[in-house]
Length: 105
Image: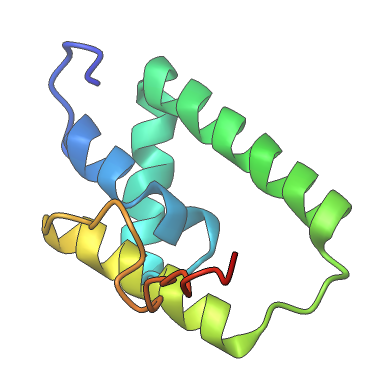
């Protein structure tokens, strides 16, 4: 997505790192750069607002549940794969396939 206008920070860079911005997991200098981008780019600001609203809704509805450590590790692993551009398997490769035992009829 791009608004078609030239910006100091490209729209694709902002959208690729939007969740890092939302979670404040980036240096302050990058946060400032993104805030400047949102001031001049309404499509990115709209996307930011939408993602921020979803994040707040999820926190309100699910924020009190403890997440199992292994689930968090799996999700973070998938996020890392996606960010690095690797293919994410359709099925969870960590789950052992279920094999049916023969039935005694």
